[in-house]
Image 1 (cartoon, rainbow, N blue to C red):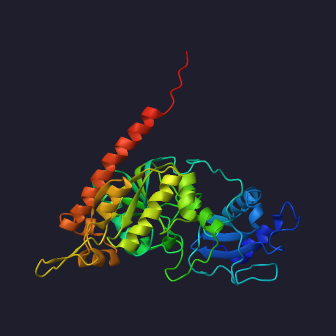
Image 2: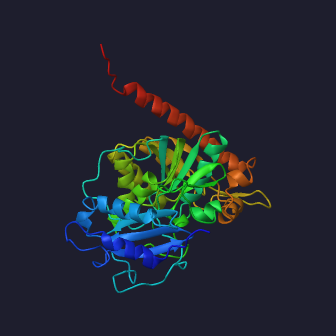
Length: 392
């Protein structure tokens, strides 16, 4: 019978670990926060000041290793946080339970960005992924996440080993869109296994926190959580990774541009002028950080009545195509506003998987084929311009 680890046992074990600068143990200093235990999986946070993030990475690894070695612990996840969670402090005088289920473990959450981390594009993040594409929008509400999910499923149906990363830390939606239940496990005890659905591997903060739990973090914490979802997840070799970006042009977009060798970005917009203005901002942002823009998708392009077939252009039509031509980028295609797309998305069964032979699924498939061809061309061009080293 497996030994049931308790929170008190974990805290007692950590009393031998000291902050190297302050000289006291991390429990007395109140650095340990939010200890969660779930079926042998342990997650916790270490409260540090933001300017000590890089300095205390060895301490984080020491704590994680020590907890993982305790009897009854299957996996241990320890993250650094620069913000104290309300009511979550655990000190030498506070013990909130003894091995009971304290809710879902917030693995890889809330860690402070490590000052001095590599700012060059690429780094060592997602090194096993051949092509990473960002699906972005200048504003919310244009159907970007639905587009990202259906494109990922389409890539998988085309035979590509595909991953899907939900980079929208504040508003993750992949649990609902993919219909995935449960939480990620860990095969090696060191990294999380991605969730799998419809032939793709996926990771999202939605898999790590309760659906109605708000994520109230500052920018550096979001950046670190995003990097951990890329670095500390066992993605394995992939041909394409689709990254569902949050709307706008903020920290997450810069993190992806600086830390990941993006093969390109796809902009999603509706035909409305106000949406196209924001799409233009997204395009210019990617160009400023030297990320190729693969093209523009017009979502909610038109409404076709399911009863009579009459086509209504509710938000106007053709604006995205004209904008793409004006901005010098490719127009990838249009997706209609249709009840079936909404219903399958809400039901966790993307339309490319639910109705693969239907016209809406085929619209996504056509865009995925165009993108796959563009990615091959882009990767070939990059390989051709790479410097050659000749040893004589």
